[in-house]
Image (cartoon, rainbow, N blue to C red; front, top):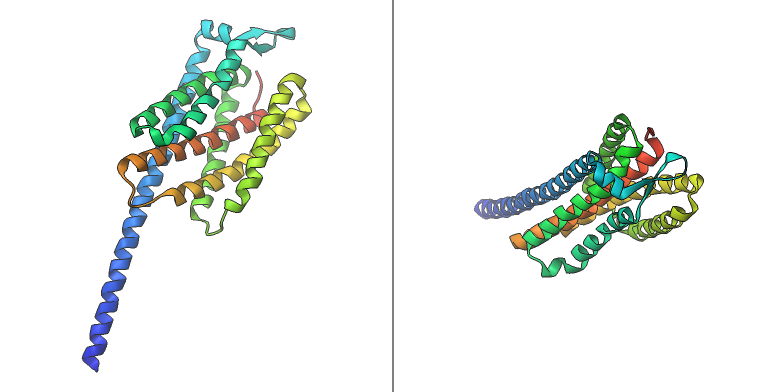
Length: 253
């Protein structure tokens, strides 16, 4: 009887060891996958920042994108509007064409998208002081890190907030387009406040969703494409949160 008990305990111990080993492998794979997502996102943000800053240093590009309006205020030209809205095309290409692309193509589209986003954000360096841009960047980074960590570690299902956040995002887009013509400072303030709340929520929601997308058995091509799409989501969350906070906290020149 004692021998039977020892055999049973040994079998149970082996079973537990195998289960723990499999769980450890999944955990290591998940960490590597999330690290790849964050690396893509961070490198995209760096590229965007470099292009935006470099764009301000090219007078011909600035004059092509902005013209002096009433009171000397800079007004976007038609070319600037084309640059501002062109990233939407890249987002659509990645969202609807990712399954037909090679991983290397998806990466290239992401880098080009990040560079075009940089061009569309050159106005930030023209409108706001460098000190306030730096300050708001670190505020954004801290907020993003906290909410992304929450989304990664929480056991709470955040998917139920997805529809609400998506409706808020659509509302922000519509209101922003309307305000291009209205030029209402009050509406701009409301859009920025609501935008901060929406993108803070989306950061946690998207992080959890990216984590759930991980599958240990994915081919390297599939895993890379998932990482690129995850990076795109978090990149947009970070950048839009930064822009909304700049509108609220940035010091104008």
